[in-house]
Length: 503
Image (cartoon, rainbow, N blue to C red; front, side, top):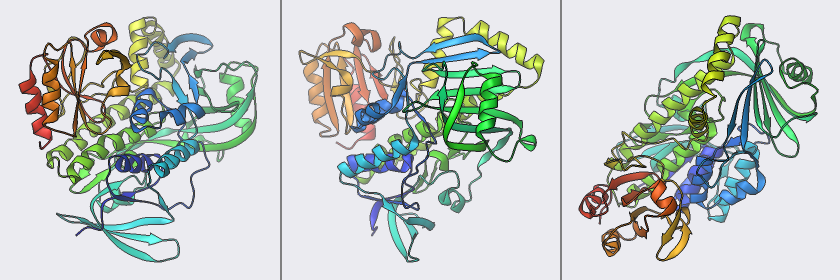
C-alpha cells in the first residue's frame, strides 16, 4: 500500500501550482522542496493571459492582478525605427495584458494559496532517488539534518527544474543545444523617458529588451555576442552601455538589485510520462526566455496533469486519461521551443545583410493587423490547443474546434446575465448547451455523471453566438473544449463523457 497517492518533487512555481491543484481536487499528496525558503530573485517575470485564466479557475487570479503590473502594449524598433506596435488590449479574455510580477512574488502567492486550501510545502527535504515499479514508486527523501526516509507513492511528479533528479534518474535524453550567444540582464531603476510598455530594440550591435517591473523597476536584457568573447560578469556599466548604444537614449540605469550573465539552452525530453512518473516544467523542457513562455508553460503542464491524476486516483476513469498528458503537453513544448528559438535567432543576427533583410520583412509583415493579432495571441498563449488529442472529439463549429481553449463570454444562463468563466465547472466537466431546443436534456445527461459533470444552458446570442454558436460543447476541467456537436446530439455527447468518466 502506498503512503501517499502523489509525491510532488520541487516547490518552485510549477510544484506549487501542482500542489494547489491536487489539493483543490481533493487528492492527498506530499510536496517537497530542498530550499529552506522561497527565491528572493525576480527570475521569471511575466504571467500571460492564458495562465491568468487558469489561475482564475484555481481561485487565485485576483491575488496576482492585485500585485502585478499589467502591460498592454509591446513595441519593436530596429535601428531607431518603429517596426511594430502590438496591442493586447483587444484580445477576448478577462486579462488582456501581460502581467509583470517577479517570480519571488509568484511563489509567495501560490504558497499562500496552498496554505488557504489546507495544504503545505515541506521545505529542506529533497528527493534524492526513486525506484519506479508497476504499481507504485518508492522514493528516498533526504532531510537537512541528514535523516532519510522512504515514501511509497502511486505517482511521482517531477517539478524539480532544469537539473531534475527525476529526469536524471530516468536516464532521459534532454535533447537540444546551447545557443552560442551570451546574454546579460539587470533589474534596475531607470531615469528618463521610458514608456510603460514591453520594448524590444534590434540594433546592429545586438538586441536590447526593456520590460516593466514593479515599483518603478525595469528588467534590461541584452546580448553580448559570441559567448567566448563575453565578459566574466554583468555590471551596471555594461547595462548602461547597452541602453546608450541600442536603446531610446537619455535613460540612466541605477540601483540594481540583480545583475547576471546567462546562456540559453533549448532542450526537451521526448516523453513527459514514464510509467507512474511524470515530468513538468523545466524538468521536461527549457528554452529561450524570448516571449517569457517558460514558467507559464510549466504552470499549464501542472493544470493539465492535476485533474487527470485526480479523476484517475478517485477511480472515476481509467489510465487512458493519463495517457493524454504527454502527447498534449509535449506538442505544446515543441511549439514553444520552436517559437522561442526562432525569436532568439532573429533578434541576435549580427550579419548586416541578414539584419537588413530581417528588418524589412518584419516591417512589411507587421503592417497588417491580422499579423499583429496572430503574434499577440501566440505570445499570450491563448492559441494553445490540443487538436490531435484523444480528448478532442466531434466536428468543428464555425467558431471553435475540438481542443481549442474555451473562451469567456457574456451569457444568459438560466435567465441571468453572467460571465461564462463564472459558471463553468471548476471541479469537472461542463456540458454547455448553447441555443439548444431541449435544454432539460442537458440536465438529465449531466445527472448520469454526477457530480463530475455540470450542465449549463445558454442562449445563442451576443458573445455566446460570436464565440461559440448554437451547439453542444463539453468543456474539460482545464477549460479546453473536449467535444463539439450539434444542439441535438446528446447521444454523441453522452458517449464522449462515458469514454472518460465512469457513470
